[in-house]
Length: 392
Image (tube, rainbow, N blue to C red):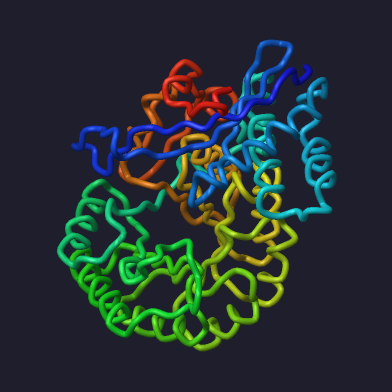
């Protein structure tokens, strides 16, 4: 089976924060997908939605388009070889970021094709299931900043059946947002507000719900330590990305001076970047993103590497439906799995451009026995939402 084309799609879809809301043209979510076609009529789908969005999505889509031209005529079942060719052909500009993201999108689509060709879900090609469902953690509609809103959101998530959720109670005290870093500091008032919100949320949901705090890699060492020490009082489940990813030494300092469990990994790319984390005992959980770190092939290898250190894995999969399903397919086969991330507890926003809704019940995702990823994108729907120049 030969690859005949590889095409990127960038779509902007109306987005709601709650199930009862009506989609609005004023609120849109941008997603980047990849379509890989073959001469036997089988199509595979990949995803590589980047954050914060427009610039990154267009840059990576351009790379996918160019790399795709070099793969036309290749055997679509040669997944490992194509992965290595994609990574190694671009090593002079590095193997992280856009390079591994490009490889990820194509890899996911090739696994989708392989599953469809053999009539099996991807998890059956990776050794078969070790569980019958995928536990999820999710996010509140509002990222934090108001105590009463945070309490209401938390109660809404618990009512949906989710047993864990993640939020950033510091975000509204950082005017530049969570994709910005200058001095790595937050005001004392902002820090105290974060503690107040987290304490109120803990009181509202009780002791059995796991509260995960995301610091988004924004803080310098002393700020991260102070923040974490204050949050520990409220029995947080983990403190995620306390410092920027570039310095493992900074991470080590925070880890040595705090008691909360540490989670890192959404900004680490390929198995080689995780070795130092494991060898130096820098994290209690890792959270690679299947669409960034190298695709299904690489996520499975990272999970196996983590298993040898008895470190749980909890993929960062909070973009589109391909992102969620690709991570879930791998985690069905992984013993050392914690939970899979989703952007919201209700993912019906996806339904306007996928062929079957995701089966989420009481905080768990159930994978269908359909071949490949178990979900397909609708090209006609994608055309409706696609932006000019990136419409397949």
